[in-house]
Image (tube, rainbow over all chains, first blue to last red; front, side, top):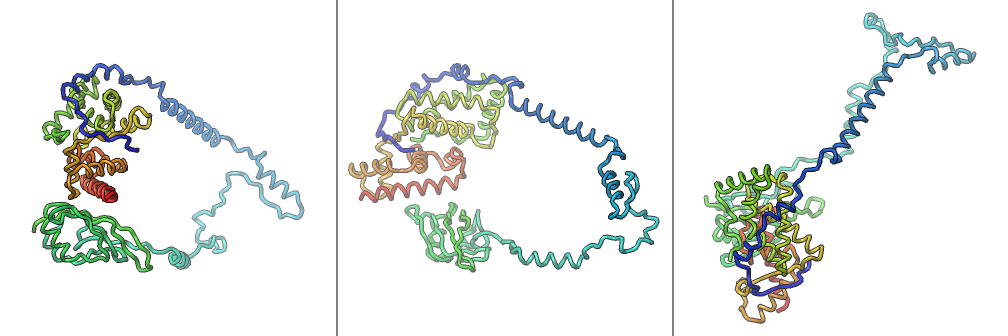
Length: 242
Length: 190
């Protein structure tokens, strides 16, 4: 949005001039206060359509499950018949539809092992999982944000700040620069500091001139062990008395 | 002169206001007291940012119409009702600029100019006033709105935060950065 004009010392309107332009009746008349009928709402038609679709699906699946299984015309039995007519294929019993294929529990002790489907043992699964785990880099839990004596945001006692020499980081990298906004005794200043140190002069000014006020540590940057720079979250601290 | 000395209200006033809002949500005619309470504030906010008086009144009316239409969606968040109205006003204002019904204007007083120049630790002479004028014209909208609210309208950071829907701290940082940008522009001319 471009600023088109700057007016200097434009005569302001008085309270009476502004009040004279109040017209609540016009506001009430022009405001669109009538609620449309529910039949005009798109949600109404959406609900109708959705419920129709749901009913249709329910009815069609119910029909399918109740459909009788016609043994004589089933595709499976047709295939078995064709196979039986083929002299090269071993004869197969026709599928009746109710015969249980699962061996009964009564005879479980007599079941031969060769009938069981071989399953991978836990040991095999664990070793495969371990190989996969090695391929996926482990996400390490991070402990905390950039902080001064463990305080990332909120109130910090002046005595703690006085003894804090660096800005710490809970991540696997080191802070290599930041900006700090504070009042230096006669005006608000912004300083860019390289490294993670909190100079003694800075701490003194923060304590002497910013007690009870917010101090902002922004544009914190860190470098990890691969040499990659990272932007870190800001710290907003309020310096309080002991 | 502060535009809005009554922004920060006591709990009692906020409860009273909330009861008006609840009544107005059931019966739009009960919106009248809220309209009367905030009409002047919203108008001044709008008129501060445009040149034409009649257009400013029109936009103000649109703000209250929109507020009335959407009153059922209003949720009390522990801040004055006016902060919601200001957000609607900002939206209507920018819409009127986009629709070319009005031009973005900044209105300042000489005393405010002098205060800003003193903030920059420069002499408050005609040349510096002219430099500051030209620097203000080059500011981006997001910086200008902060300078307007903080330095011309004398709003508190809490109020600025509620109007812009940001935290008070963030409002302070943004205002500080806006003034630094203005200083940079001012000093480039030197």
